[in-house]
Image 1 (cartoon, rainbow, N blue to C red):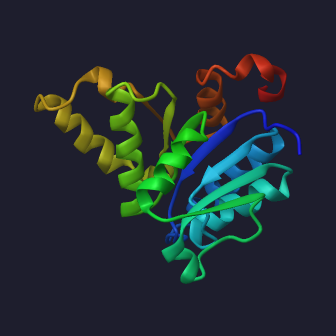
Image 2: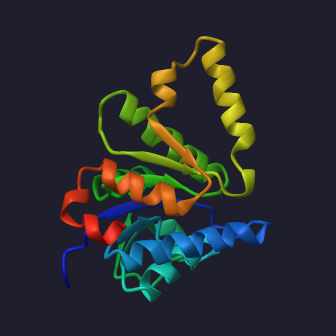
Length: 195
């Protein structure tokens, strides 16, 4: 198996959501990763947007690293078609391995788990535990209210503009995904493929 050009960690919902645009952006994200010779790093589930992004990555020639705790495997949520499926003991170990194996991070629409993963990796970056790019894919305005609340945090003095700038927000995966990979420092290896 060839070395992937990059590894993109995707956080997203284990449900499909109510807007068909959510499933479409998951499929588009996976297809982009696969077409550009990348590897998806994600939570190893087969349901919802998680399964859609993994299936699309595989269908377009990409690799998929799924990392899932035993408890979720036992509930039959594991995506057994992953290129590599790693089963761990705890959620903490899952998130650490996902972060360690990623060159960049992007959050698609999702629920409480997606929020928690995004905020944790964002907090790690602002504390200096990593310097990997982070993106928020704001499909169909899903994150509009969150972005307004975060700006309220800046206005109230609990966050800074510099902290806000650590996360790139865009509604277009065709802009956001290449920007994240380029910012990871890997772009010179495959700049032509990103055009």
